[in-house]
Image (cartoon, rainbow, N blue to C red; front, side, top):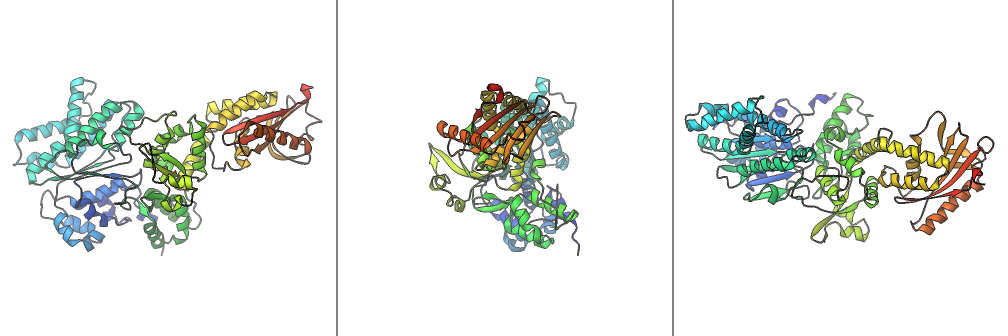
Length: 609
């Protein structure tokens, strides 16, 4: 029987809509007892697209009461009847299911090019949240003054013409947003006599956007007050849940929040709650007739280590399954879904890092070689620039899903020094071995590298043209400076342990500069062998022959010796044979490479005689 690709919940973040539409749902309800009967305030940290919003929607749906008929749990019975919690946890369900007012808001859309536009977007979100509790306006239990305040706040939130360039309006807007959840919480307590559940999804998105656009202090003040008012010393709070990507220090955001507990990707509890385990993925592929494609999915989308649990990104897995069934299930190739769902600006900034040691660390990661970083604790959302410390890059990219922790079992396979980095500390900072988790994320790096190190980057192209002219002019000093300058930034999927990495680098750089008159030849048969690279100017009748070799170390004498060996190979194999008859000037270059360093030697050409 044919399986329809329409069963996959692409774009669904609302649990009730997903279940009602009979979309695929991987049952995570076994975690509900631990979430509900535990800490008063819980922070859950996971990368983007792992299902945080859907997980919080499921939690909210389970706990939320019927406001018109508080004893009615038919909604939960309909939505959860086939799931673990309803089948195996009846005592828990009787105690908690459908018992509480729930206030749930996602801050993922709270953004703007400046503080006022971002605050305006938050006002609109608050207005939409309040509209869900429209019945409160008709309450007989609430103080009429409170109801009037609610009505005024809703009117302001829904007024798109409310001008935040006026200071009084700006102050009013800040007060409404900062007090919004606590204010609604108190109204619901007065109405029902029950403490509320407050869920704040993607708390750090407005901070990230504020960092990029230059209004972080103002947004920090708002977010800190919003969370603090709702979660700190709130006697009308039953449970609070906050999700995000980045762990910003407790002192900066969650100051003095009582009974607060944070669970990140390296904490054992809830390690398999958000995301797909390998076992869950395997079950999906078997159930939907894609068992033969499971290994492709594992290769491309597995690799995240959440405290020893192998996890896959649901967004990528489900998109691949849907597309495979929509096309040819047997041959459809895995795609890079991550790139289209996450901002990759941090990749470009990281690749522009001017330090050659850190550039080499990034190259090693591209090649699948783990690298050690010192984990950073952020007291604010980090303002990333190309001059940032690599440990800052590494920690941020660990939280956002571009890197993952190397498993302890894999650590033991590394050399002893690297193994020490798995859980050791240095100067008070925890250290960790990290890696790129899978093929999909590695292709994010590669795609960004292709754009950064290609013709579309005018600065890179300008340097390439200068390099070509230096080789054709016989200017060995300038050529060496340009090769070293460009190599410092360059990363590739090719393995730098082999000469082919440097051949690919130089061939790619010079290949951008081809014109009608200027050609680049790679591994072309000439004389008694194959020259690595040849640059020809057919109009000026000038050629440059380049022989590349990888050096065993970067000691100057060693590099010089390797350059001479390359030049000797050019002469011994007569690489210039095919050019002597027609080209007036022939330059011969021997290039020695080691890590991010290059040394170039040149043989005297005919014009030097």
